[in-house]
Length: 168
Image 1 (cartoon, rainbow, N blue to C red):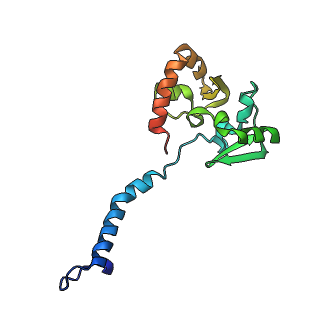
Image 2 (cartoon, one colour):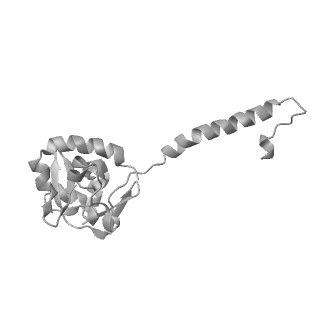
Image 3 (tube, rainbow, N blue to C red):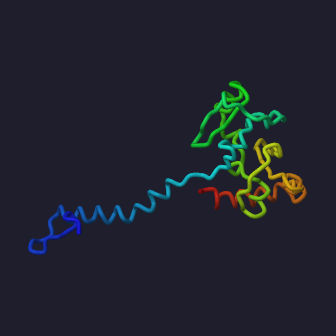
């Protein structure tokens, strides 16, 4: 046993021993809560970047383009690429506006099953000023399904699912 945790049975418990013991117990009880605050959100960073390396500001201009390694920024551990300095500066003014919903995972899969599914960076929708990305491969275009099945209804479910699974 650690010496600072041992109590001398021949002497009465001292004030210092009691306080050390209480501090140790508090530490044990509170340590799970401290580690809970250290969770990180699981972003889809295919090829090392959000949106598969596409410049997130270009989606809002209606013409998504892959960014350049010359214009990179990192936000909360997430790497973003941009086509030019102007777009990088625009992003830095309001990163929340340009960041894709659901960590860059497929909005349809998030809404229907609560799953993290990779996306085709050229299959997207801007809805109410927010960027949604979608899976589109092997004859499955989830953007079409998103619209057919009711985007607003799926968005509500996707928001609920994202809150439950967004942490790694």
